[in-house]
Length: 205
Image (tube, rainbow, N blue to C red):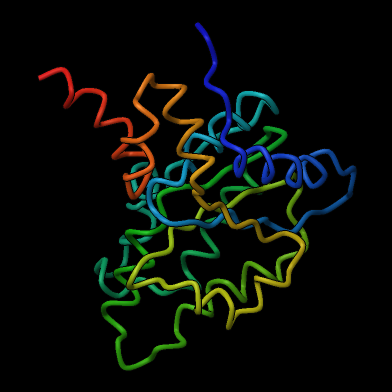
């Protein structure tokens, strides 16, 4: 089966990440892969998992029960989320761990703590301070209205070498259009990769 060509932005992030993933160290700090919906974060993550023989985990799907064992979903704290990620990484024997699906939890934290606008920075601060993971680890974070890029800026991740922001440029849309055999003009009008892929099937109706 033919493997899709990475977008220019995905390839650029992968080139930077490869340095982190191949670095031989006794202990690692986690990397953050951030971006808006439909920029290709999960696709890139799963491709990295295959290429580096790693483990892909969707935290909400596979480990939510651990977070809601003692209280409700609405009362999950950023610190608890961070501790779970760290625990999962330390429990794995794979050469790489990728943790996805966090936006539902982090958005719930943000929504239920509107009076504490800086509360989410606790998650990123905890991740940033972690320096003792046995293997490389990538934490995927989807930015949106409840989880804006400003929070990441306030937490200092923009200037951290292990922070990677994935965007979707016009050139990227053209690559996706080529992968999915969609008209380039249609792809350029789309807001994200999901819309580009859907346009292929909608045109068949």
